Length: 452
Image 1 (cartoon, rainbow, N blue to C red):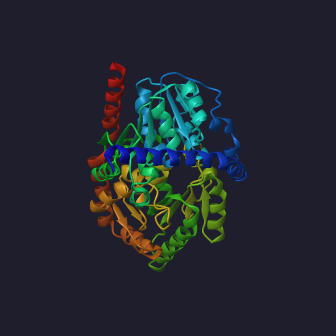
Image 2 (tube, helix red, strand yellow):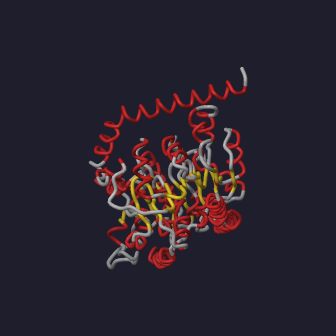
Image 3 (cartoon, rainbow, N blue to C red):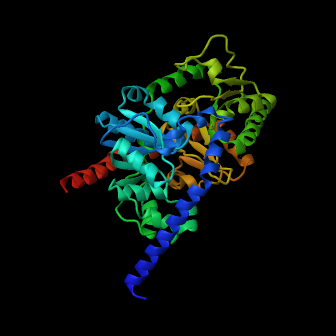
């Protein structure tokens, strides 16, 4: 078979798969809407702004920078980009998939949302006509998709509309590699206007599936603006804990809530047996609809639990008449305050790493100079996890029992704890600077497009 025939065959196969994908969205759309309504029974925000998902908006703009940040993790990844573009005076439209992502975006950039410089809408459903409405409403001159999001209709519609679309802070995990090499997902990924990868390893994976225009710029989360007020609030609260060590567990997923509860109890039992001060635990629930559930579960287990919403004011200052020294756990039932919760810590564990879905991102605690101890499932955060392990900023354990032992060993060995903290700080210094590098790449593309 000739090269032309092979190319034609691949193109035909791709077109067929795209047609099947689009048909699937049409068939399953009622179920997708039903899913949103069912989710709204636990989180009413899912029933809001549904018309936006179909391309109907109350706001419009021209010549925007479009950034897609799917949910909480991607918003944190995009935060430094958003700030950099806002400082330049650009108009931004941010698309989110989840209410949590939308709320986080609004919380981080409330002033710019109020002035209209930054607009937030839900990402369009995967239909050509919906993307046409989105493009007509906001006229984006460039699109930045954060992390590992590969939405076929988004990519193809952007290409057809001649809107440069970049996958930024990009990673192509081993799971994607196994599932899609030579398949639909890999083929679609080649249609991005450019790939801005986290590391050389990730860049090589994109090359292996046929992507072009690949640049390595590093990890943007290391460049995010950390609110000084949250750091200061954490420092002010620590003395109220009576000199106890603090362990923060970030982004606790439902599957691991019981696991971490048992970890808290085991560490308390060890401290009591050795007649030393109990550690204090900060339990940051990932899903807002589970804030109250986790509080009740931890309380029912016999732990003395405080809720952030009931013991701290809007500025994170402690409210009066709270017995901090007798408490075991603070439940972080808020959004946009992860830097505060992790600044309190001596050591951090990020949830997800004992579940098949894998660990959530470790960049935030490392950016604060906090050592991280996680379980074995790190495929979603392969970068920076592999490099962080090598350089001592991340330590992996295989079982929940080993997690307890590792945290206890670190908290009872001040020299080793200090070494781990220094390793996290050195890692941050080595891998920061990704935002400026990424913006330079995108500026060059926009300049060239303007010249043509």
